[in-house]
Length: 102
Image (cartoon, rainbow, N blue to C red; front, side, top):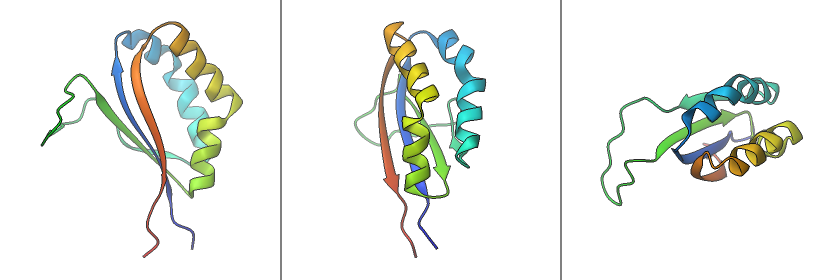
């Protein structure tokens, strides 16, 4: 069995309405690659060091790292990312990681 893949995003939203306008389409693209949301904005966050309280984590799980990578690089998703950046939605960091196969 292949290890799962994860997309981990740390984001600060200066214009949350822009993200809300794209949320449904992002979910559709995520679902196309078998992804599901594990952590999203709005839940309790406990910072232990290097606090960035204006940033919120988002974690999505995919069947494997290839599916996670394909989601992020999907042309429709990249168009949304480009539009968000062009419209100064905020700031963020994205990491795609492979889980541990135990």
